[in-house]
Image (cartoon, rainbow, N blue to C red; front, side):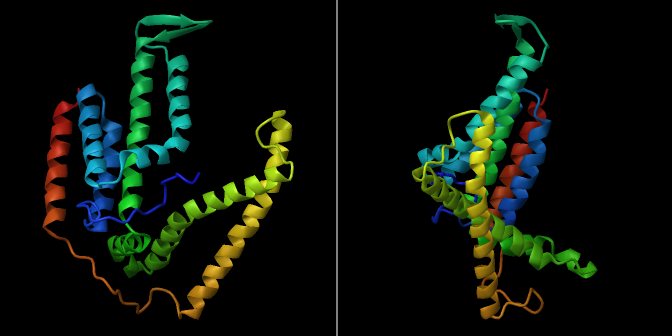
Length: 264
């Protein structure tokens, strides 16, 4: 869990780090939508190449990113196997016990797993290269028109930012509590399923207590610093688009056009 990269920020001076957070959120938003329209090898190749090039431009070690994605590999493999044994399209390739594996199942399982991996990779790059404060400012600015209908934009952006920030903290707290409970004889990994579910209770109770305690401490700290919501607040750093942001938009539009041409 210490290697989990979801919600973590890695300081750096790369081109991706210096991009405006609104630019990164916009590109990732449309990337997530477009990837569901991929239906050929070349369309997936174009999207995968864009994701891998983006990861390289962050200058974050590839080993660090791969280790951070370990918790989701199990889900990706499970998705692939599920399609492999459930989908019955195409020609029969081989047989495993009483299950027949079809060519269409292999292709669909690989495509869905790759899609899932690229989604997680691109969204992880956002948090790895953008501080929670920058994400909050970007979301608040992009949802600015909703303020006219008295929608609590600032509070929503702050809530999302705090949630992202505390994901790795809660993961570390979970690992610390699980080790403490294991030293007291609680077994989380062996025995019947019923006993293992019961063993989770000593883990969840102190975790919830710790989470509520952290939330209370954060609320008291915000009140002590005079926080009273987003009304009338100013920003120390104003968001401004630069030439590299426009270059990314142009490059991404070119990728979208190439992707649309490569679709079957």
